[in-house]
Length: 303
Image (tube, rainbow, N blue to C red):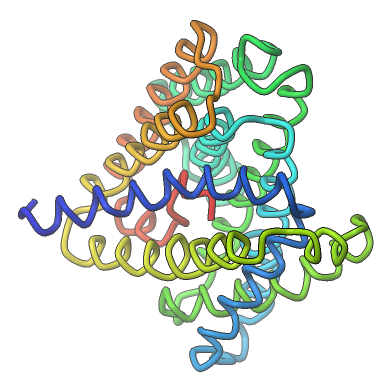
């Protein structure tokens, strides 16, 4: 990689890593699905010119959009009201093992022994954190929070498998549809499952809230994804995809330093187990199916 490519890769990881701090802080003052809905409305408005209707493929895009633009954020953001930013950043990495298992079940991709062991190691690492209670960081409900974030990772994986069935959409067109579907679905979900949205908005720090939404929409979504796909056009996915595991390292660092997330032996062991397992799965995935994996949603960005 050139100095510019390395710099952009590190910048992406920093943006996505810090995003976990932004989300954790925002859902502390706003209902999580309501916050996610506002964020997706802004992204959809910006990307509206790229909404292209293509007959024959829209059902995959719309279903994928529910998974990648709504369910994943509803589950993840709600989970982060219970789990720490650090624990969430580790748990969301399960979308890689989930994607591999779904590819085996529905796309005929048979994982070998190294990937099976990597998947088992990753799940075991998240389980170590989830059952840790206070020692895992996040209090007595950390298990619920980690479980919801892991469910969000599963929704991402399902969406990624569905979207693999489309071939004519460019990345920014996919993002536009995911944002539109997500904005509509999250708004409806917030209306049904949450309350006090406008009271929370009225009593919130408007400057902070605006900054958080802009960071989520412009930084994590638009800038982060654009830069990621720019790297994929220039570098082998076997280089880019495993490298963004650095996102989780940054997220844990920011969570501990800025939010005071506990980081005891259980978090350290569980985190290392998860990253090691995900790393093995990623390396084997990109070696076996680099061309197809280029369209998988970036793991670990929390956006």
